[in-house]
Image 1: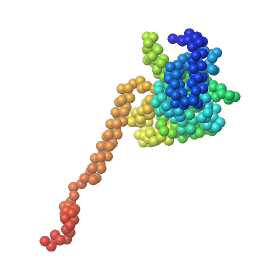
Image 2: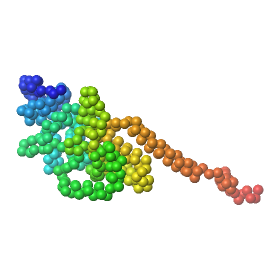
Image 3: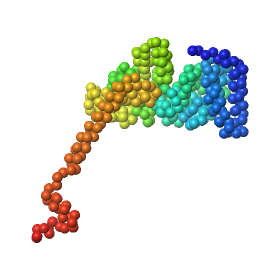
Image 4: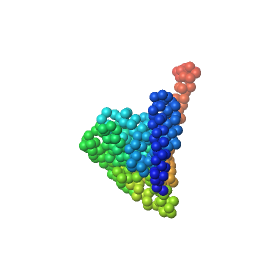
Length: 351
């Protein structure tokens, strides 16, 4: 249902903006009281401000500075776009953000990790309205500077502090150096991803699932799926076409290196290697905010890997037990026993 901002009335927004400015003016008088009041104020009116950004084009530029978000540096406090800009790195011209179903999920997003690891702050857009609202805020002007808002979960993420030609050259080298695992993953995950690419931007996660420039985020995909089902449609096939994402893989991660060794030692037809590859995708999907469509198949892959690991451990334990627990010879036993009692074997020869 489309909400027309005019139904809220000019008087409502006049009071809303004036009350917000009142809290800002009192900031220097009582920081604690301001923080508490503004949090309550934001919780009560924050959604209406976002609707205003979407619907009220005439007043949009006046409403945007009043928006508040969590971020990778604000901890439990909200931050504004102005505050984000104040904390920017030198020569930074982009405002980075990620959408997710809650702050915790935004924090564990591998896409956000790519930005945080380089020292950039990331805004966490965690409400259903945020993704629709942010489409109306592609740029933010402060003073004479114009800052671009960048979704870090999109393919082709660029940074202000690096040369784009060097970035492309580095990625091409990574893709060539790890061509075997890249090609293998593209084949094994052909129905799940558009393509696979190697990246050095991830430093903790083995892989990340990102969307193409015009792809839908996980949150929007769930919303579209729910809308389709509610209207009597089926989600079969629809989600498959929307899930054509890009898998970015960290070749320095031990898990990816294990997969590379597995492909070489066991061959590309190995069921274990295939399960490993699909699990890599599953983990990237889950941490990137997606849902696993076939939970039963996912559980079977986990159990298969656990069983394989348990079998290897049992065999290793049997070998170790065989090497350690040996029946001692009589001579060995006699020597051990006499030494234990403080006697020497030579003493028995004279008895």
